[in-house]
Length: 262
Image (tube, rainbow, N blue to C red; front, side, top):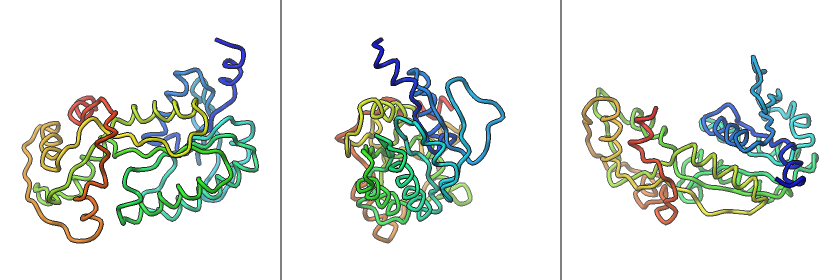
């Protein structure tokens, strides 16, 4: 290992949202690769993990951002509030201003396949954050991925009433493993600012019918479904395949494998 590589590994990488589903895996992957990590969190940790320092801060107010960013090599921005997308936009603006002030040389942002094509409020917010990152005067990388495997049973529960799942007709998903996405994000940290990089999708496009069967089997039951053609532009965009990126099916772990491992 060269002296330059050793030196770069001691300069911390800041992860926002580092206690969330994706953020935890990004932190773990950075540590596995010998990187020093800071995690921006609203709460202190009871104990610190080796190679990881928890920095108390709040993206909603900007408190603690200067300390968290001071001397950092890069930022991986995973923090998000799906129920309050407008807060994501405000938080990203604060982060970018602070990152520019701190002289951060690379910000990596995780986004979602379809944010530019599906008229859903959270997706619009993610797209707005992308635009802020692109214009924020901090060297950047943006990665869009399809939904994580864990999102599929959660989504199906939302469409289930009395044990019957109401499936939006002619829709599909392409779920991807969160650990694979984390590894890709760390690859991008190491690659340096790369702009908008190719999307990452799961290994297979799965129809809503098949997804319901796979989830039911993992839960030890039979799927009971009805199909409904859902109205509205958002569902029309889903039927058109805008949630998918079959040409970038780079994932390996399947939905059934992921659910079996949980």
